[in-house]
Amino acid sequence: MADAVNQPGPVAELWEWQYQGACRTASPEVFFHPEGERGPARRRRDERAKQVCATCPVLLECRTQALEAREPYGVWGGMTEDERQAYHDAVDAGETPVLPEITARPATSPLTTPEAS
Ligand code: SF4
Image (cartoon, rainbow, N blue to C red):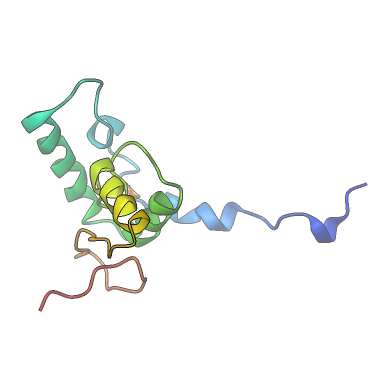
């Protein structure tokens, strides 16, 4: 029998925020680009997804998870895959990363951007 003390704790609580996502009822096609999509069509779709994210009560949790997991595809937490890649590139280069402004919720995480002055 496995040693219960050394077993990982329940992980359901770590993911519960996903049930509150504003994208729960949205089409995944808004958040993930089809193969070969580029230019204005891609920008418009990304902006539509980011508009949904801007209304999301769990944007911060989603963004944090996507950055920590280095999520390679789609819009997560109001960031496109290119914006997340730029974030990681800056961190890897020892630079201060730039994050899209969060307007839906108050800043409560080190991942949030400072208030515009
Ligand atoms: S921040 Fe965007 S991608 Fe993340 S759960 Fe909310 S609506 Fe979905």
